Image (cartoon, rainbow, N blue to C red; front, side):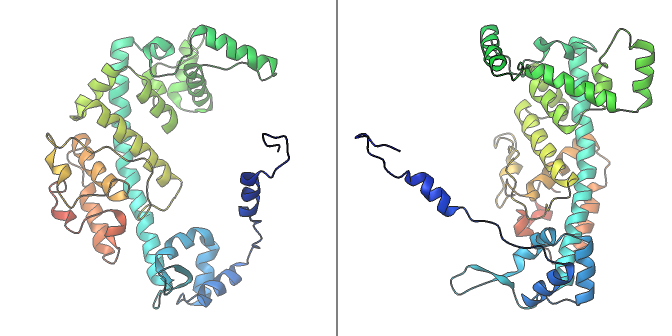
Length: 345
């Protein structure tokens, strides 16, 4: 590039960027080679058993559970070797604990998610009727450009042969239609046979049964504030707490549904903690880290108490922890006294 005097000079930022980029040259290993590599790094395991585990569980997936067992050098940096005494049995127990934790979380999230959809849809259709979601005016949370901006943007897109831009509400309705067309539920077929000639879309109370997490989350963030307030009041929550917890719950659900590691994960979406004045229990120290699964377990436990007061979910969760007493709960963002914490009593 030229400087102010017109002289060519080196683009340092681009040069530095090129120097920091490294070609990935690692080759694929057979499961036998993977097992030998782990054993050479200090993992205590029967080779045949380890090969069997690696056949059913991806090496990279298992490495997430091996990571906390890595040793440190004199400077405190992690090495590729494992701490003395690291056994496959210990690592596999942690893997199974995490898998069963995900199952418990999915069980809780299912009931919470259904309850949230039910209350939001109920209050929405009471206010706007069964097909009120077809009117973008009833869903003010969807971004809508002024007409002149929309025309200008679409003109630019057309000149570039990129078609026209659709409004967020139109895109959301298209997703609902796609979900309807893919559905094989009896109620969808019945509705189409009886009302399909007049109604392309399902009533919202039917459509909500087909919604993905994404479309349900978009609905929650797009309804008018008074609808959110009414739904939140059904749970005894402030409206912003309902939205924050719903977003965190749906994010956690996606991680669980895709079999991601949960027990020591750091989450980017954090649930808000209720205000201290009206909810002092949430602020007792030591508390639950807001970016770890411990707080989400607490949210699920608290919310299930509102949704299903007779649930035995807490007992099953405690039984799981009792079965795996070696799990380091600090890495889950859980304080030592969590079982006697007022939120869990």
